Amino acid sequence: MQRYKYTSTLRNTLLVDIEAAKELMIEVGLEEGFTSTNTLIISQFIDQMLNRLEGITSIN
Image (cartoon, rainbow, N blue to C red):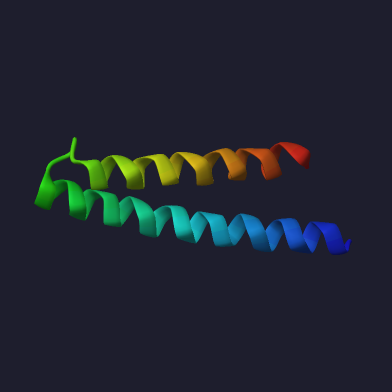
C-alpha cells in the first residue's frame, strides 16, 4: 500500500512539473525562438520527465 502512495505522489508531482516546464518552454520559445538553445534544453528536460512518468506508470 505504501508503494502505491509513493508512486501516486511521484506521478502527481511529475505531472505538475511537466505542465510548468511546458509553459516555460513556450514562453522562452516565444521570446528566443523555438530552436534556441534554452528552448531545446527545456524540451529535453520535459522528455526526461515524461520518460520517468512512463516508467513509473508502466510498473502499475
